[in-house]
Image (cartoon, rainbow, N blue to C red; front, side, top):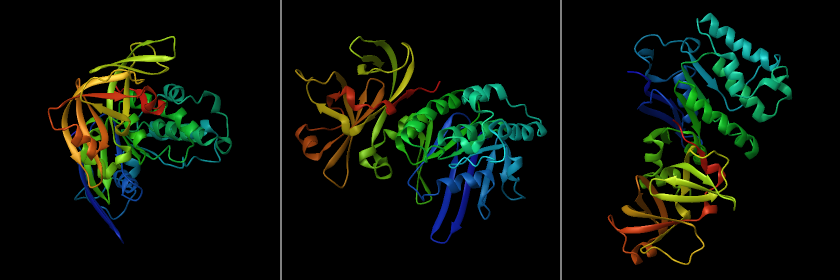
Length: 364
């Protein structure tokens, strides 16, 4: 089978990892879950760094772990980006990259050095010592070093977790471009749902060492049954959009399958494909099309599901055009609106309720 396939188990005192899954052969798969659920351990098993794991790991027709002797880590062709960068302090940035390139050439690969340096915007850092770099710069170098090894599979273990919001915002677009152009599967570990929504093509949700849900990111995030794993406050759906035009009053008009949306100005040219994450708690529902509201975004939809949790809230799933949308409302409101599958509604989304961090370029 092309791509990565794992069927593994690993036991520690007080914790057990048991997961079976076939990862997509292309794109970025986010492994999402709370701290301690086994995300990083899973990556270490895939890379061959975790002794004691039982079961099978296969990639692109090769058995890395199975009945026989496991393939050593350095022969798996895996690039690994750790949370703490782990650069060679005695080498400058260029030296860190050359070290990885030499290993790749010995294995018969030819990394695109110029392209990697350009993609990660490292030209001005090549002669810097790694000890003088900021956290964001160190992570950019760590990603570049992993790519300079010409990997067949890239593993990224929460590479943005230790960064502040500004440095994280600077690196996210670089990872988006890497996702769209690298041509190799990427597995990206995170416990930040907005990061997953922005970067992932597919998502694997974990809890307590087990797989909870897996599939295309838009499908998984729009599934009300994932509320217990995600948290009701974090629930939200992804909606593809395209930039239509920028208005003089500072708003950008977007086309979505169910109509038009106006958001605070987005730095993207007309025609640019985007993905939007719309939080469920920011969506208001109305039986009739409302009039006299300050809200500019009103989309017609049809209820496809009503998910009742243990508390006073309800998650309503709508079909808006060709896409799904979630709304989190009270049980009392759902009863007053007599919501059930097939009910026609209008969804109201405030322009300012979608944060810039929840607007990203779409994978192509």
